[in-house]
Picture 1 (cartoon, rainbow, N blue to C red):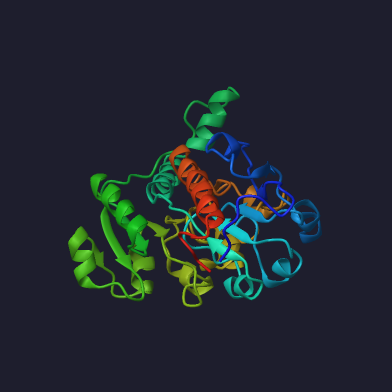
Picture 2 (cartoon, rainbow, N blue to C red):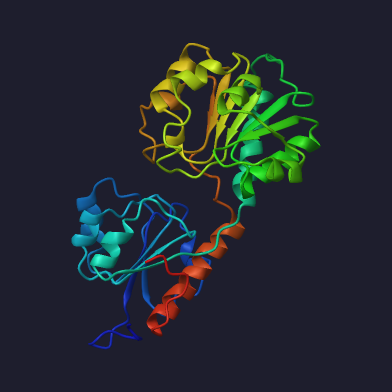
Length: 325
């Protein structure tokens, strides 16, 4: 294991902080242990990325904004430490990291920010906040929509982990009937939260006025909600996804939205990010979309970058912490 403070010629190790969209990373932690460079723009190609960071021994990435597949590790021979925000990042090939002797570490992450954004999307959709606010700004009609009541409606949760449980409690506070389903969900778990256990995924989709996805992306959950599942939903129902885009089949969702099979969708996650400028999800009137803001809050960012610096300091001392590989 390494124990390093400077490199062989007395220069500090170089650290690249990727996808710092808001330009806040350097002000949220003390990076004095390394020579740090923040990159605000997303690199559209792997060639551009390699050109920019090939001279850096340490790279800090934000969630899955920049994937690290095996071929990227092979093109970065100087890389020794890769840090991701959060303790799970499916876009990193951990086996490749080990093969190239790159240490991978993570950071803490709060579950409340994505739960809060989920409710922002639910309320924004059901009360038509964007079109009504836009009309106000442009002297449009005074009241042009009729909102959907949450009180007395049914909230269906696909997943009842940390985030799903928070969504459930807020739904209950609104007076909603909350039901939940996942492959391993038990009556004991739902009973603890006063939530009904749906007998099946299909039953949950058919009964719910709002369906919200809170599952980890895996081989079992990829494409979990497809054409058949969306066809079970009520035409007045809304689908919310602040989890992972691939859990919902994109083509089936677009078709359901275009044809009015469902009333609308609130989306914060997309299979390719940033979302293409001409993507249909940017234009559909029954979609409320945000650019993956679920985890983007001051408290989370302070945790991410503050603990990234801790990871760097521990690595330089020869005792890495929060290791993923």
